[in-house]
Image (cartoon, rainbow, N blue to C red; front, side):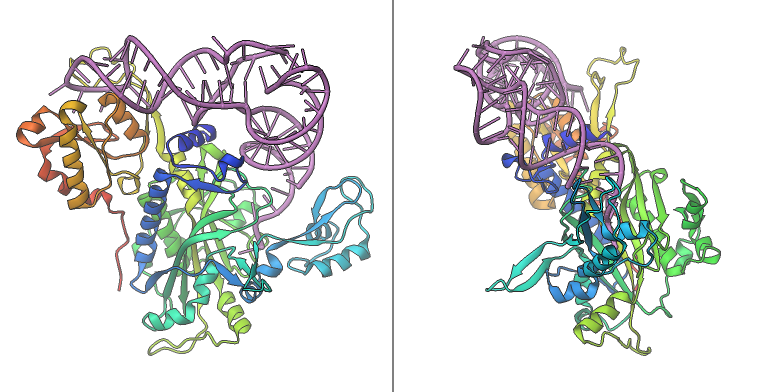
Length: 516
RNA sequence: GCGGACAUAGUGUAGUGGUUAGCACGCAAGCUUCCCAAGCUUGCUACCCGGGUUCGAAUCCCGGUGUCCGCACCA
């Protein structure tokens, strides 16, 4: 689905809209409406049951969104998560100090403080790349983090977290006690992260407040066994860094087993790459040929990442592959830094094992971006079959194109629509049935009353409601209903009592085999 | 951040200085109809914000905000 089409449908149907819209909107901030909120929660639930479900020793926590300055100093965000911004006094163009230096043959400038970069720039006395004037300002740190005046006097510095991961690292020692004193230990966080993006763009793709779902797996690098054999035959559409350097732009399928045996990738990494592919393919049901794993080379990835693949999905609305998740092998960087910064020994001794500073494998997932992708990939306009003239009386001849949001049922905002065929005759019964489904089975149920039944089906199709129950004259007599399935539009008649049992399992997202 | 384009009902749009600001879809009420956006009647909602020019501004000018595209950015 194309960008404008998708955005207008999302706004029209209450999925999302620009934040503070009555004041003209705020760049980079969006509000989710009822349908968007419901979908987002189900998406988070599906993520959670898949990734947290990988092991009984993986846990979901909800850490604070504000972190004191010491945390971002240790994590490196204070120094690195900033653009050393240089302005030309003549033409006003902005540049990055480190990029300018690199372009002029200075190596190893990455991560240097703005003052240091400033001295180097002064020594070189570089001209403005745009207008040629030697009028460049000193670098000013433009930090992408939102700073806060914290505490009663506003004197303490704190920041809105730029990523959820830090909360997991900060909780590690507590979780070691809460958990079972065993590695691997998984800490998952789903929540908002905040970045003061210079140029927010593409709605949910670069926001200033966005939701991440991340699983940090802490493990002993000498002892992290995974059931690789379960996924060894799985073909992973990888675009390796070395192939990209040779000019490759398309992924080559590599079996997870081969990635380990001949690809130089550790088995724990290949296994989780495969599990992430399964999540995209089997849980979110993205078409397999639209997903690829792009390996970042040494220059592209953060210095502490030892292996880095982005999970990318090709979206028509954004004209190409977009990063929707990633797998980072971060080594012991995080615990090591926070150990030093907090003067806390974060090494642990698993029962019967030796003392280690755990390494971290990070599986990250952009919730908002994937919500957009679920629209892009699953919304489709179906045109009526060309030859439809001969349909029988009372048949299901379609006359107009319909828009169907073919979400997996466990992601759909509304689960069941109960439609009185004729409002005056069947509405009371419909309410009764809907209330019973809500009360006894916990389904989310809507009862559309207005417009013709065909139009009501169409509205529900567009908002992904997977099942419609129709109340007709026969329902009034014998208590049977018809159940309509969204994608096929096929209807079956069955006793009301049989309904819940028939659909319940469709609302449970798939999960991996839980291994103790 | 820079450059370009754009900004009119819920959505998509027409409107080159004076219009009751038009249309389509939509939404709502009623009639009709037991099954896939039918029909009829009635109704609803808009010129992004702030200045300026002008007798008069949706329309021209300036500033702001927002969106898209390109560049840059995305530890």
